[in-house]
Image 1 (cartoon, rainbow, N blue to C red):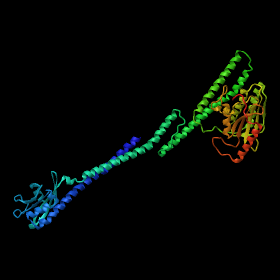
Image 2 (image 1 turned 90 degrees about the vertical axis):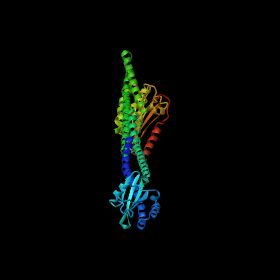
Image 3 (image 1 turned 30 degrees about the horizontal axis):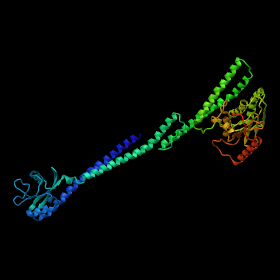
Image 4 (image 1 turned 180 degrees about the vertical axis):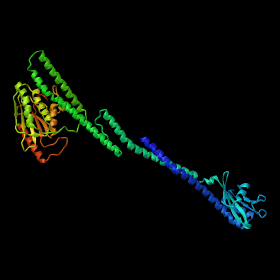
Length: 488
């Protein structure tokens, strides 16, 4: 495109220059000729007064020699004598003063018209100027104008016109090249970005530069790339979440296989469950690894609202059956009154299953656990505490980073990451501390009127103070000091 614009500019500018330069050069050439002929006419007119006064040869020769043309040998005077009153009469001779360049035949042909004329001869042009003398006789003044005088200044004028034309063409090419570069460079950047995006580089973006149309195309491309990143991130998160949710029924299967006793069938069942768990863990690790190497998505998941107390009672009923089989004491408090939280039901179920599943997966059989729900009608926060009487968590910070690949053996590193993302989607957070039962305590803090951490309406000072009060009450009930033990 760039060279096409340059070629178009070259063609258009060349035609314009030729359309103006050629006629202008011809006009300059014609003006130079007219100027030379006019000068010759003035010199011929200067001899007229002398011819009117005298016919003396010596005086006429001195008058001719005093002119520029006469001094250069380019002027002659055809003067009829008394014996030859008519210079056109072929039988008589005329007196010729100076250096004539006109032949007798041309002279006789000219005298038939008796008016000024120009004749082209080799090397230039002759001006013949008739002048009346005494006795009704006609003298003719001849002035020779060489070709050099006819073309005086023409070559310089043509060179100047050529230089101006070349400068105009070169300037137009430079301007066309700059404009073409300004137009083509954003198009090349857009094409390159599209090619790199097709190769899988999701972080590529296009600067919004160039003409208005290309700026709009860049904005559309960047929006498309952001949407692709969001869709891929949501797809990977969905795959990871669905894979992790499979661990809940898988945990039940693994616990039930422990009651099968001995035998080939029991061993095969336990082996199949272990193999299935390993495959699910591999899927989760693969998806999380892809997410860690892709640009962070700015999109949010589907929003909703659910009764947290109802969901907690339902999940505790499910896990209490397994707790009874393993001899665990389970306790639930604070989930009697309805309390609405701004999260989808499926996400809250996944978060609760992740926290309760950790208790069964990482504590010995017979370990007690409890779920406490703290909320008040004046508070804009709901706090869910999952406590156990196990060994606790050695490194709470590392446990919360497992969503980025720091999980230990037997852990996908995704459970607490699901819980953390759910809390942050409401403007809350997730903390790990020491429980009143002596083991670990997972504190899920959900904001009821807050916004997601990725942006939204700001919080007013009133709710912020109430959230701070809720956090202080929670710290008073369960100080967040980590304990040594297993990692989750």
